[in-house]
Image 1 (cartoon, rainbow, N blue to C red):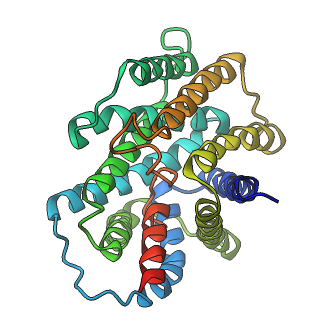
Image 2 (tube, rainbow, N blue to C red; image 1 turned 90 degrees about the horizontal axis):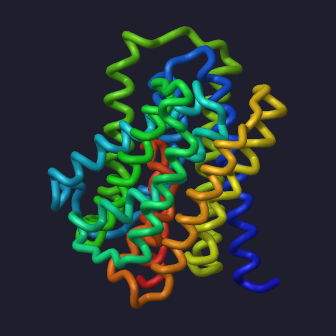
Length: 319
């Protein structure tokens, strides 16, 4: 089996697990606020990350070199998690994914002022076409827009902003700082919301929040394996396989039927995203590769970014 095929299969398995992870979120969201789900998932997943951070032998402290960017990135990670979890609980799975798939388009736009990225005509057209795909999914004026749609759009925007911030300061900040701060912010801010949103959970539901954390961890490890095995240009497009799982899970578990607008709009968004990835992969088109460097799903503060874990692993191997 070739490296490219092996990496693609790792990625497909990772995103299948991520999709199942989102199904559990949607199930729990029928009974609990998204802040409560994030709080307990983060609490139960924290030991997994703590053991990883304990093995970091790099000299230094946990004081960020870019405190304001680090603070903003932590807040956007919390916002992305809360908005994304809420969107999954109230919108059809396929529709939520379609909106979140706009992230490569938004990253490309945000990279212009924040990274000094120069976006040529072809990528610019791809962004515009992709955003038209989002409008096809939302079809404003002919379909009622809800708080769920606004939450999904917010998650796509803040998730994109988080990715660009990491790209901007990632070369100067310690990986441990970049990994730890969003997780601590998520724990503190969602914990502060508990007195207002907490609903008692039976043991089996509490266990499911642990399942969310475990699946996120396993999917992250598989994603790392994928990026270490095959080039990013091969692995990155595999994220779009989640739409297949969304259609299957939505029909079997939640009686959801993806309509023609959602499917057509999703196809347009995916085509635009893949084109942007391919253009960045040529090497001479983008000096920052903001989309290809974003190896994570929208950051929720539950697990570190894939790019940071990869960077940390590469540093340990070089020691």
